[in-house]
Length: 399
Ligand SMILES: Cc1ncc(COP(=O)(O)O)c(C=O)c1O
Image 1 (cartoon, protein in one colour):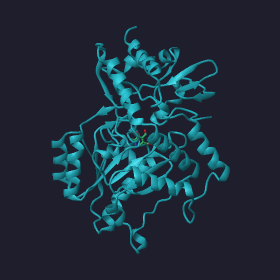
Image 2 (image 1 turned 135 degrees about the horizontal axis):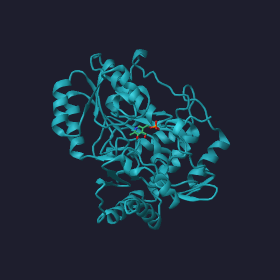
Image 3 (image 1 turned 90 degrees about the horizontal axis):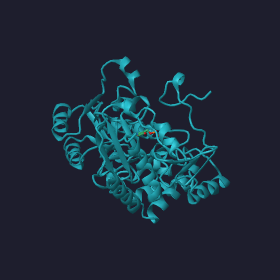
Image 4 (image 1 turned 45 degrees about the horizontal axis):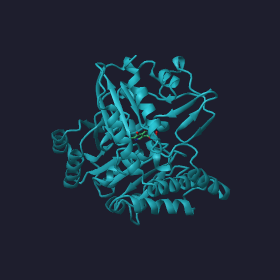
């Protein structure tokens, strides 16, 4: 029996059984559906892309997996070099893992140990945002702020090691003033908070965060698991404001195989680089640097670079803005658009009950959550298909 995510198994709606997938389409036995959410935001090139698929096959013909302790291989070395090349500034040391949650766990562990290695064991708290989501493992749940998703954490009572703030500069400044001596890091989903409800905030917040982190020697961690590789219209938000640590996942492999990276800058790396074994980073996922995942990531990044994906994403944004411009409904609180993401937030979550089935009948796969009806399409989507997705969203309110 499969235990499904985020749902009460007793009342679970039947999942659609996929028998094939290609481009932006998922195929059931008798339907073709546009995947309007890119399989949880990661399948940026669409399905069965020949370049990514053949990279995986070629790697599999050589070997599918070797461990990364005591062994190395060409694909992981090339991926590490590629990330060093495409990430801004001196973000150049990559620690690989198998999922976004683990990449964030590693970042939080690095932040704690960064200070401990420098002799300061008092910096044990993290600063994070209200409505943050950073994954479902324990430390990432703590950094997250969603009482519904992570309601089990409530059994511990008040969070001891985390402070949540809204995305306003006064709140940020105030938190630094009050807690500067106990903070290890500030962790944020930069510009776009996805699972917390597709909430967009201004880059000025990140710029001020950078200044304060520098001033108080607090590490700035960007969780770009969802925003990385173009989703906000920027290749990385880290191109706008440079963090000390960046977490990548999801689209890192084009969504073909789960993999993630925690990439740190020179300052952070140097706090660990020592002849003292106590200062080493004690972490090592079995599948870190998996060769199939690295081969997929290299192919995915080469497509992203060679085929001007930022232009594709800008086109998606322009079409989306045009389609949503005149659209209003009294049940809608706000429509938010950034890069390849559009979210219609309703006043009431019940307004979206039944949308999944409605979309299915119209050839679209969607999965609204909270009071958010959203699309995060694969970047290769054609205009006609994108309009089909957006029309479906609007038609729901015209019934
Ligand atoms: C910002 C962010 N961080 C971390 C994660 C966790 O990634 P994973 O599901 O690969 O563990 C997600 C997943 O949605 C995410 O959106």
